[in-house]
Image (cartoon, rainbow, N blue to C red; front, side, top):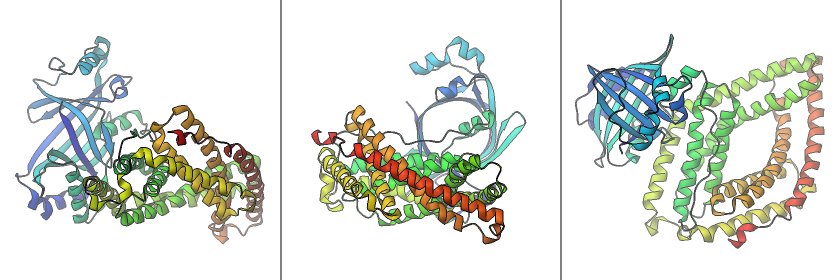
Length: 515
């Protein structure tokens, strides 16, 4: 079964001439550059039956020839696309399923009702510049620079992107080449996690791909710790990068929330496996940088869409609160724009590429004893019990002092609970699903309460960011007073709720100790 492995990069439209004369490409090229005009028609049913089956069907005209291609769902992370692909030459611009050999595709596409309903959904038209590159290790990569548009009826969306398709060798060389390109180019380059087909469907439906939440990591008890760490890190990286497009589109705050969750999970993975991995400091430093870039936008999202909106519902006729909301919305948009700029930056792209390369190095060196800490050789089954128990006991010790905890200590407790929850989610496939679900639910309840307390603690800091010129009026000062008073009451209520919720947690059975 043919498998396509490629890395996609999005670039500014004015970069084409620059790329044609890039010394890096000339040095690596083992073929003369070729130019093609490509006209591609994508098909589906009116209710998008193929899309629902994660299948893309297209006819592509190259010169006088037509190629029919079917792609099925694969994996996408950090711009790296891996999926199954079938291509056959057809004589005309008509679909032909007679040459199919895969039983599942035959069953799907030979269904009379489906085949009769197939229609043109969107078209891509672009110029492709191609050359074959050879990397230092012998891996060969097809470099394709595509510039054109996606069309749905009279709506058009331009694009300029580079596809790096692995022809032979190691997939990691795609990241190596992408990093070399990123460093050689004077303009920002962004890893693209959405294919042309997916962008066409977004244009056709007017609906973006939904926010991507964390998926379970399938682990086995006999796995070594390095393998486990890499699987978890790749899982977090997948969640992080697949939410980029939604953040950049800027129409749903949930995408940014999921990127922050992915970052917290990834940093927790580094903490959990800190005794295993080496040479991690540069990567951790950059993950902290990215966290700092996204935090203000998320804090203002919560403040405006959750906290102030609740107060406005109660004081709907208060002019000062309505005016303050408008001011806060301006600040929220400012911080969201800053977050988007960070994601578009060269530093962000370098972080993602270097993290992928670093993970490959960790995997490659995992069999070399001198490259690993001795704890890396411990089996997963020996590692998890003490880890989860130690974290659980730490939460209990701090929880017993709940009456004495200030805002900083409560925040630290929240972080401890969050790390325990992520650790359990990482390891959940090793244990009873029912017991895991119950334990995670108890942690989530505590985390939600402490999250609300943390949001309340942040309120005063966010109010202080509002320019004094906006708060001089009597109505504005009164509005801030209402928010501060409501916030204090809310804070006390949540602290009382925290005490009640902690009580049953003390009796939680440590089911992993009998693993």
